Image 1: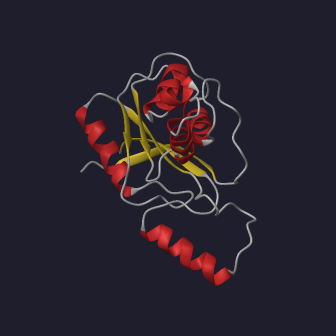
Image 2 (image 1 turned 135 degrees about the vertical axis):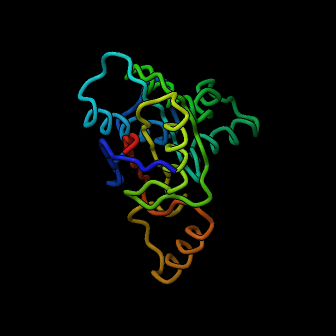
Image 3 (image 1 turned 30 degrees about the horizontal axis):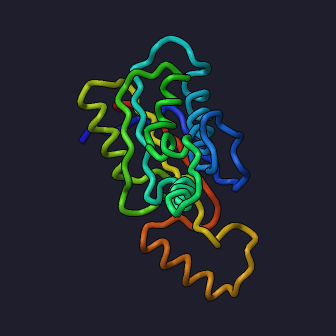
Length: 191
């Protein structure tokens, strides 16, 4: 397996809602992914410009829970906003990032078996990035790990500490996010 060299990193673990993202609604997941990608690409490239052979890889064990919940609600008889269908595809936000930054590499979304801890990227996502680079279709890969908080585990919620620890441990073992929404992006290339 090729070794990777990190060109830039960015994290968003503060729990603050990301800025709105035009074309996406009902969920902070896609704006979170776009915000951390923007930070990392700005650190690595400065500004959008000429086409770059950069691929995008999104890793999320839980995915966009808020959009899934909104679709479930819509399917239960309420009118569903048309944007929800578009944003239910995890590649939609990656397409937005690729268009904004003129990135021409492969676009991939995966669901690793366990959620990444805040500030980290799953090892299987980095292994896939190395494979994508070895394939030759990209010179760099932007790897993004993003997780939404579990419903009922938002910061500031009060419940007995022992009960919260058991719930969080069970969620971690099941590969689910707890606490606050978080995302980390790493721009990598072959070492």
